[in-house]
Length: 113
Length: 112
Image (cartoon, rainbow over all chains, first blue to last red; front, side):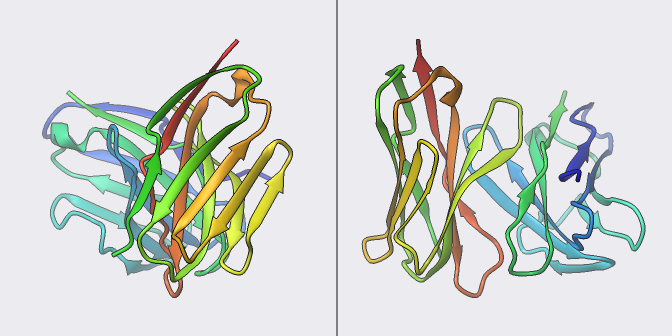
């Protein structure tokens, strides 16, 4: 019974490149959440998705960031034209339903050179 | 807007000590409070989840208490071990919200 899986675990990009982070939820979970953890900061909510729908993107930067959760396959967090300030750990969580407990993945650590 | 504060930010203790980590929150209308453990470079492991109607939860050497009226929770770790070394995060979920607010964590080192 696999938990939340994220890949890659570590990602290095140069400024201006694109970063794609993938998240496979717990089997049977259709709700996915993305969080960002900056150095010395707490986790900050970015976006909440249900299959094929964005439910809440209030924590997502308005530019360069997008997320999707297609009917088939993992959820993708995409960062275009990365800048050094995007360097952080990005965590994905999933839940069975909207109000249910969230289970967290191991995170993807993005470093922008 | 809910704010969650964890004190101390860092703690170093010798093995065997009993210790208390603190979490305070500004809005007492919470749905639940959860304590997580985060190891360096790793994800979050849920330790204890306390519903708003509960006063405490226990798991092994861990005990978490909740006092909604004062906006506080404590995580008590008995007989600490080097393997307890990690960052401990407190997360508070408001009633009607599905998104928890996290504190910045307490970084704990237990030395032999």
